Amino acid sequence: MGIALRLNQLKATLPQDVTLVAVSKFQPVEALQQAYDAGQRVFGESRVQELVAKQPLLPAAIEWHFIGPLQSNKVKYIAPFVHTIQSIDSLKLLHEVDRQAARHNRIIRVLLEVHVAQETSKHGFGIDECRELAAKGSFGTFPHVEIAGLMAMATYTENTQQVQHEFTLLQHLFNECKTHSFAGLSFRILSMGMSNDYQIALACGSNTIRIGTAIFSPAAEPQ
Ligand SMILES: *Cc1c(COP(=O)(O)O)cnc(C)c1O
Image (cartoon, rainbow, N blue to C red; front, side, top):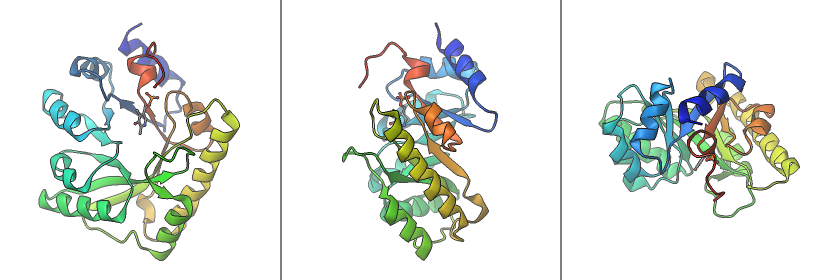
Protein backbone atom coordinates (compact mmCIF):
# COMPACT_ATOMS: atom_id res chain seq x y z
CA MET A 1 0.00 0.00 0.00
CA GLY A 2 1.39 3.40 -0.96
CA ILE A 3 1.79 6.67 0.89
CA ALA A 4 -1.14 8.34 -0.88
CA LEU A 5 -3.52 5.53 0.00
CA ARG A 6 -2.47 5.39 3.65
CA LEU A 7 -2.73 9.15 3.91
CA ASN A 8 -6.20 9.24 2.41
CA GLN A 9 -7.43 6.37 4.53
CA LEU A 10 -6.17 8.12 7.65
CA LYS A 11 -7.66 11.47 6.65
CA ALA A 12 -11.04 9.85 5.98
CA THR A 13 -11.23 8.82 9.65
CA LEU A 14 -10.36 12.25 11.08
CA PRO A 15 -12.84 14.94 12.09
CA GLN A 16 -12.71 17.92 9.70
CA ASP A 17 -11.33 20.37 12.22
CA VAL A 18 -8.30 18.21 13.05
CA THR A 19 -4.98 19.20 11.50
CA LEU A 20 -2.84 16.32 10.33
CA VAL A 21 0.89 16.99 10.47
CA ALA A 22 2.71 14.44 8.31
CA VAL A 23 5.91 13.72 10.21
CA SER A 24 8.47 13.18 7.48
CA LYS A 25 11.71 12.93 9.46
CA PHE A 26 14.18 10.45 7.95
CA GLN A 27 12.01 10.20 4.83
CA PRO A 28 13.47 11.00 1.40
CA VAL A 29 12.06 14.01 -0.48
CA GLU A 30 10.37 11.60 -2.92
CA ALA A 31 8.19 10.33 -0.10
CA LEU A 32 7.22 13.86 0.91
CA GLN A 33 6.46 14.70 -2.70
CA GLN A 34 4.14 11.70 -2.91
CA ALA A 35 2.28 12.89 0.16
CA TYR A 36 2.16 16.40 -1.27
CA ASP A 37 0.76 15.12 -4.55
CA ALA A 38 -1.92 13.33 -2.55
CA GLY A 39 -2.95 16.69 -1.10
CA GLN A 40 -0.92 16.89 2.11
CA ARG A 41 0.40 20.39 2.87
CA VAL A 42 1.53 20.29 6.51
CA PHE A 43 4.79 18.49 7.25
CA GLY A 44 6.72 18.02 10.47
CA GLU A 45 10.48 17.66 10.78
CA SER A 46 12.57 17.22 13.90
CA ARG A 47 16.13 18.07 12.82
CA VAL A 48 17.30 21.47 11.64
CA GLN A 49 19.86 20.15 9.19
CA GLU A 50 17.41 17.76 7.59
CA LEU A 51 14.67 20.38 7.31
CA VAL A 52 17.02 22.96 5.80
CA ALA A 53 18.18 20.40 3.23
CA LYS A 54 14.68 19.30 2.20
CA GLN A 55 12.82 22.60 2.17
CA PRO A 56 14.30 24.03 -1.05
CA LEU A 57 13.64 20.76 -2.92
CA LEU A 58 9.91 20.73 -2.23
CA PRO A 59 6.97 22.99 -3.15
CA ALA A 60 6.82 26.40 -1.49
CA ALA A 61 3.18 25.80 -0.52
CA ILE A 62 4.26 23.39 2.21
CA GLU A 63 3.61 24.53 5.77
CA TRP A 64 6.69 23.35 7.70
CA HIS A 65 6.33 22.53 11.37
CA PHE A 66 9.42 22.02 13.46
CA ILE A 67 8.72 19.41 16.15
CA GLY A 68 12.09 18.33 17.57
CA PRO A 69 14.50 19.61 20.18
CA LEU A 70 15.77 23.01 19.03
CA GLN A 71 18.94 24.74 20.14
CA SER A 72 18.71 28.52 20.27
CA ASN A 73 21.74 28.93 18.04
CA LYS A 74 20.02 26.98 15.24
CA VAL A 75 16.79 28.98 15.08
CA LYS A 76 18.37 31.30 12.52
CA TYR A 77 18.54 28.53 9.92
CA ILE A 78 14.81 27.83 9.90
CA ALA A 79 13.51 31.31 10.75
CA PRO A 80 13.23 32.44 7.10
CA PHE A 81 10.62 29.84 6.20
CA VAL A 82 9.36 27.73 9.13
CA HIS A 83 5.60 28.10 9.64
CA THR A 84 5.25 26.75 13.19
CA ILE A 85 7.72 25.73 15.86
CA GLN A 86 5.90 23.20 18.03
CA SER A 87 8.77 22.51 20.39
CA ILE A 88 9.37 25.67 22.43
CA ASP A 89 10.77 24.31 25.69
CA SER A 90 12.29 27.39 27.32
CA LEU A 91 11.81 31.14 27.60
CA LYS A 92 15.29 31.57 26.16
CA LEU A 93 14.23 29.76 22.99
CA LEU A 94 11.04 31.81 22.79
CA HIS A 95 13.09 35.03 22.92
CA GLU A 96 15.43 33.80 20.23
CA VAL A 97 12.58 32.84 17.90
CA ASP A 98 11.14 36.33 18.34
CA ARG A 99 14.53 37.88 17.58
CA GLN A 100 15.11 35.81 14.46
CA ALA A 101 11.55 36.26 13.20
CA ALA A 102 12.02 40.02 13.56
CA ARG A 103 15.17 39.88 11.42
CA HIS A 104 13.08 38.34 8.65
CA ASN A 105 10.09 40.58 9.22
CA ARG A 106 7.91 37.61 9.98
CA ILE A 107 5.63 36.33 12.69
CA ILE A 108 6.41 32.73 13.59
CA ARG A 109 3.68 30.65 15.17
CA VAL A 110 4.84 28.59 18.13
CA LEU A 111 3.50 26.00 20.52
CA LEU A 112 4.79 25.48 24.04
CA GLU A 113 6.02 21.95 24.55
CA VAL A 114 4.86 20.44 27.80
CA HIS A 115 6.58 17.54 29.45
CA VAL A 116 4.12 15.05 30.81
CA ALA A 117 5.57 11.68 29.82
CA GLN A 118 7.47 9.55 32.28
CA GLU A 119 10.57 9.32 30.09
CA THR A 120 13.08 11.81 31.44
CA SER A 121 14.55 12.36 27.99
CA LYS A 122 11.53 14.29 26.74
CA HIS A 123 11.83 18.05 26.56
CA GLY A 124 9.42 20.71 27.62
CA PHE A 125 7.95 22.80 30.40
CA GLY A 126 6.55 20.93 33.37
CA ILE A 127 2.79 21.16 33.76
CA ASP A 128 3.01 23.24 36.94
CA GLU A 129 5.76 25.36 35.47
CA CYS A 130 3.69 26.08 32.37
CA ARG A 131 0.64 26.90 34.47
CA GLU A 132 2.63 29.32 36.64
CA LEU A 133 4.36 31.02 33.73
CA ALA A 134 1.02 31.48 32.00
CA ALA A 135 -0.67 32.83 35.12
CA LYS A 136 2.16 35.30 35.73
CA GLY A 137 2.14 36.39 32.13
CA SER A 138 5.79 35.36 31.90
CA PHE A 139 5.50 34.06 28.37
CA GLY A 140 5.26 37.73 27.54
CA THR A 141 4.03 39.35 24.42
CA PHE A 142 6.39 39.09 21.53
CA PRO A 143 5.72 41.12 18.42
CA HIS A 144 7.12 38.44 16.13
CA VAL A 145 5.83 35.31 17.80
CA GLU A 146 2.29 34.00 18.00
CA ILE A 147 1.89 31.66 20.97
CA ALA A 148 -0.85 29.46 19.54
CA GLY A 149 -1.08 26.50 21.89
CA LEU A 150 0.54 23.46 23.43
CA MET A 151 2.34 20.38 22.15
CA ALA A 152 3.09 17.21 24.05
CA MET A 153 3.99 13.56 23.81
CA ALA A 154 2.58 10.90 26.08
CA THR A 155 4.66 8.12 27.57
CA TYR A 156 5.45 5.41 25.04
CA THR A 157 3.55 2.54 26.61
CA GLU A 158 0.90 -0.08 25.93
CA ASN A 159 -0.91 1.15 29.02
CA THR A 160 -3.70 3.15 27.40
CA GLN A 161 -5.02 4.31 30.75
CA GLN A 162 -1.77 6.05 31.49
CA VAL A 163 -1.70 7.67 28.06
CA GLN A 164 -5.28 8.80 28.52
CA HIS A 165 -4.42 10.18 31.96
CA GLU A 166 -1.53 12.21 30.54
CA PHE A 167 -3.56 13.57 27.63
CA THR A 168 -6.32 14.55 30.03
CA LEU A 169 -3.86 16.51 32.18
CA LEU A 170 -2.77 18.35 29.05
CA GLN A 171 -6.32 19.04 28.00
CA HIS A 172 -6.96 20.65 31.39
CA LEU A 173 -3.77 22.68 31.18
CA PHE A 174 -4.71 23.80 27.68
CA ASN A 175 -8.14 24.97 28.81
CA GLU A 176 -6.61 26.76 31.75
CA CYS A 177 -3.98 28.51 29.61
CA LYS A 178 -6.68 29.60 27.18
CA THR A 179 -8.30 31.64 29.93
CA HIS A 180 -5.08 33.57 30.60
CA SER A 181 -4.76 36.84 28.82
CA PHE A 182 -1.17 36.21 27.66
CA ALA A 183 -2.50 34.09 24.88
CA GLY A 184 -5.72 35.78 23.94
CA LEU A 185 -7.80 34.41 21.14
CA SER A 186 -4.84 33.02 19.25
CA PHE A 187 -4.40 30.22 21.77
CA ARG A 188 -6.26 27.41 20.03
CA ILE A 189 -3.94 24.53 19.08
CA LEU A 190 -3.57 21.38 21.16
CA SER A 191 -1.02 19.19 19.39
CA MET A 192 -0.98 15.69 20.80
CA GLY A 193 -1.19 12.23 19.34
CA MET A 194 1.19 10.17 17.19
CA SER A 195 0.71 6.97 15.16
CA ASN A 196 0.22 4.75 18.18
CA ASP A 197 -1.93 7.00 20.36
CA TYR A 198 -3.72 9.60 18.22
CA GLN A 199 -7.16 8.10 18.77
CA ILE A 200 -6.80 8.51 22.51
CA ALA A 201 -5.46 12.04 21.97
CA LEU A 202 -8.45 13.01 19.82
CA ALA A 203 -10.81 11.72 22.49
CA CYS A 204 -8.99 14.03 24.92
CA GLY A 205 -9.51 17.15 22.82
CA SER A 206 -6.46 17.17 20.58
CA ASN A 207 -6.99 19.18 17.38
CA THR A 208 -3.58 18.56 15.81
CA ILE A 209 -1.98 15.15 15.42
CA ARG A 210 1.56 14.37 14.31
CA ILE A 211 1.74 11.16 12.32
CA GLY A 212 4.86 9.64 10.79
CA THR A 213 5.00 5.85 10.83
CA ALA A 214 1.34 5.26 9.94
CA ILE A 215 1.76 7.30 6.76
CA PHE A 216 5.32 6.68 5.63
CA SER A 217 6.46 3.31 6.94
CA PRO A 218 3.84 1.21 8.67
CA ALA A 219 6.06 -1.85 8.50
CA ALA A 220 8.98 -0.16 10.24
CA GLU A 221 10.23 -1.60 13.47
CA PRO A 222 9.20 0.25 16.60
CA GLN A 223 11.89 2.65 17.77
C1 LIG B 1 8.56 11.26 15.26
C2 LIG B 1 7.60 12.14 15.93
C3 LIG B 1 6.21 11.99 15.72
C4 LIG B 1 5.61 10.93 14.83
O1 LIG B 1 5.71 9.67 15.43
P1 LIG B 1 5.09 8.37 14.72
O2 LIG B 1 5.03 7.38 15.82
O3 LIG B 1 6.04 7.99 13.64
O4 LIG B 1 3.75 8.73 14.19
C5 LIG B 1 5.37 12.89 16.36
N1 LIG B 1 5.84 13.86 17.17
C6 LIG B 1 7.16 14.02 17.40
C7 LIG B 1 7.60 15.13 18.29
C8 LIG B 1 8.07 13.17 16.80
O5 LIG B 1 9.38 13.35 17.03
